[in-house]
Each structure stands twice: as structure tokens, then as C-alpha cells.
Image 1: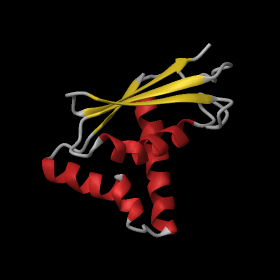
Image 2: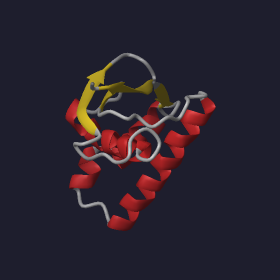
Image 3: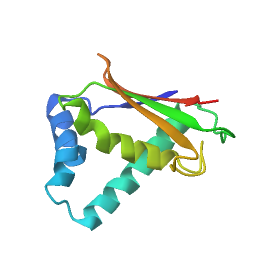
Image 4: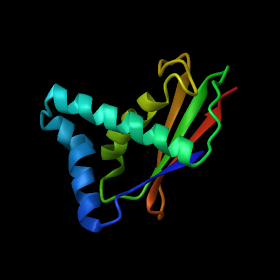
Length: 123
């Protein structure tokens, strides 16, 4: 389990949601910008894992990933964050994000100022 802090200001959080929320992708975000987004999230997730001393260990069974959000987006618009985070965890906790390795995704809301990520064994 680890967390990813939201930007500290309301304006920063709004800009972040405009950039990474699902609506930005539906609007036809260019592939090069999507690639930069993915690179940013890979670095962000790995940085948070290091900063929070989360032990990196590959699961040898299928996993479920639970995410908790507190932003102004509808929960279905947080699916872009889910994809970016899960893609960032590939090779660290599971080989890839196919059904063989990731069998459940759960999106939740909470009242904290961060995204909470939990990885759980399925079997």
C-alpha cells in the first residue's frame, strides 16, 4: 500500500485533473502527450514507492488493485489514473497487467488529500 499526493493547491489539483482525467483523453489528446503523461506517472509512482520505503516484490499469484481518490472528478473519470498507476507497477509487483496477473480493479472514494493504492493477492 502506498499513496500519491495530489497537488497542494485547488488550482493545481484542477489543472492536474484537466490534464490526466479521462475527459482529456476523450478530447483526442495527441499520442506524444499521452506518452509524456505515462513517463511522468512511471517516475511519480516509482518515486513515491522509494520515498515511502515500499518493498518491491513480484507477486507469484494474481492480484487485485484497489485505488481511493478524492478529486472533483466523477469516479469513472479516475480510470485514466488507474491505468497510469497500474502501468507504472508492471515489472515491479506483477509481470504485466493482463488477466493472468491483474484480475480485479476497484475504484473508491475517500476524504484524504492523496490517491491511495493497495495491491492484494487474489488467491
